[in-house]
Amino acid sequence: MTGPTQRTTPASTAEARAAEAQEAEQRLAEQQEAGRAGGGRPDWSPLPRRAGLKPSASPLFSLRTPISAASRWTLAVLSFAIPLLAWIVLSVSGSVDSTFLPSPVAVLKAGADMASTGELFDDLGTTTLRVLEGFGLAVLVSVPLGILMGTFTAGQAFFEPLIGLLRYLPASAFIPLLIIWLGLGEPSKIAILFIGTVFFNTLMTADVVRGVPDSLIDVSYTLGARRGEVLRKIVVPHSLPGMIDAIRVNAAAAWNFVVVAELINSSAGLGYRIVRAQRFLQTDKIFAVLVVIGIAGLLIDVLLRLLRTRVGKWAA
Amino acid sequence: MTLELRNVAKDYTVRGRVTRALDGVDLEVLRGEFVCVVGASGSGKSTLLSLVAGLSRPTEGEIVLDGVPVTGPGPDRGLVFQAGALYPWRNVEKNVAFGLELLSLDPAERAERVNWYLAETGLDGVRKSLPKQLSGGQKQRVAIARALACEPEVLLLDEPFGALDVQTKEDMQVLIRQVWADTGTTVLMVTHDVEEAVFLGGRVVVLASDPGRIAADVEVALPTERDLAVKREPRFLELRARIEDLVREQHRGHVSRVAAVE
Image (cartoon, rainbow over all chains, first blue to last red):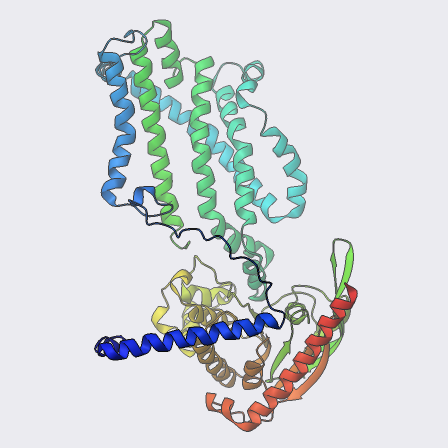
């Protein structure tokens, strides 16, 4: 408010103000001197002074600073373009044998061939169905179990030691055992997926559920809610976005396990297609299947992320 | 007679050491009263409210509401925390409606009740907003409306305006006096702000620290109809100074006892 009026004052008052400031400074120094005499801070030598932070040249090199949309897109495109370029250079220059590293065009052609005969879609369908069954079963078991562990201390005390241990056993190591137990058919593959994801998803869900603030639970009791109602109307809705996050992380793991299971024994699926191509040294087909696996995984991730955004709109 | 605390004590065990948070508390709050509890930190103010709310059980003594011993939390004792504890996924009107949704109430009647409390607390304009979109004062209005909608016998306020800026705090003080007058609800409020306690309370209870005990119970001889101007009147300032001295005395005693222990 005082800014404009001060700016219009003549130079003489500016001088007067400078003198005034100097006087005030002197008074302050005297006061501090008096304070020191009365047992204030010891008379240390002045601390070495670091130079203040210089503004960084570009937001690209500043910590936690937003960058422009253009930069963001450029970087995203580059993250794909650079490896792709390296691939093209390596295969076109002939420095790597095309049996080991097929050119992008050969891979596209192999993919188109497999798509035209329909086998690519059949394999994709088979693999996706296995993920839905195996991981779906894991979610059905792990979500209630996680809620139990996150809400009841007894539930945590009972389940956590065992599940904490089981999660360190690699699911792929169960494959021989599961084949002995369940045979070569679908059940053994679904079991591997289940074992590979259920323990992680349980522990992650339990963590999310433990994050529900006590105050929300307490206040609900004072509004008349019973324990079951607190579970259904407070704990579950508050945990829902976090549970979807856990499912998103473990869906990626499920996608990994299904291919591993199919590599070892199967007669259909994307993993099976890779093994077959290996037998005939068709690296272009292997690459094409890998691309399909990547795209399918990304698609699932995007779908779950959209769901998470819709469900978690309320989170700050 | 509404709420009665009889010789209430509460012990906490932290790493094997038992600490007494409250000791020998006798307190009676009559129907329709507005009682403020003040005390320095360590006086067990929040423990007292948590016991009345039924969220924890006293080690000794008992708490009786209308002749019935308190054994757990219930909608007859509404609670408002300092941080509000709103349901972040529910908008304002659904937060206020929560307690009513648990009852088998006719939807039209529920809506009518919710509307009344929204209007009473000045939340009509933000009824569809999510808690994250609200200011600190608005959040506390929602918490108060939500508790009141259950028509509690006693409204328990645990430093509800402690995190608000001074202007918002005064708005909320006027609001809670108005709500108290309009609904006739008994209010038991804990605060560390003596001015607030004197302005709001019909009685101010001073807690001593270590362990928390009742050190004084002061009648506030001010008219029931109060506005913010009363805060400048000599009798208000005098009462405020007297209670501040009491609190300071208790706090000093607490500090010197802690020093002696160390």
